[in-house]
Image 1 (spheres, rainbow, N blue to C red):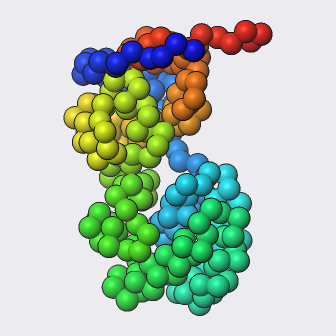
Image 2: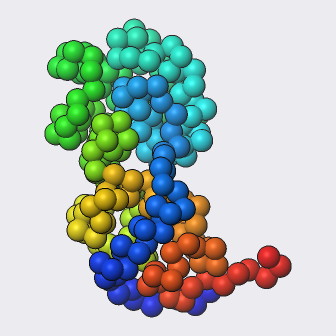
Length: 224
């Protein structure tokens, strides 16, 4: 595959067309992590760092049956949490963070998950991306969580060219039409996960290829 050329930034009209198409094809996109409430969503997102959603869902099924709230999670104890999530990468560190953030939610927030970024980011294991996911999915705030998929799509398409996740996030906030801000996060992540893949983007079946500035587009593989 030929090396791609330097990508030029999309125009706002092109970004509008892209999100019009996303909305047309999937009006109500959803995340792929399983959760019961705001707390279990927070825990699931913390556990999902450098792990697949499928792998996290397998581990959290039993974990959330036993501990659907901070108090029951603290009662489990860190070692038991480790046992339940040991199939996930970095499980010891993640179990430590889950235990600690659960205790902090009890101590500082009455066992409830706060709905502001600063309070969320003050919790162990919670960074800007995790906070944005929780704020977007559970609290319906128009935040954009930049993971590796979204970072790739933003840069590759020309929609949000930036060297850091924060730079991409800030550019997307300017490029995404206001009426699509709530769902932009999901559309872009799912697009990166299943179509605009890291090694070879599947341009031949991309629904936004006509506006994407990535070149050369990947051709349909032989035999397909």
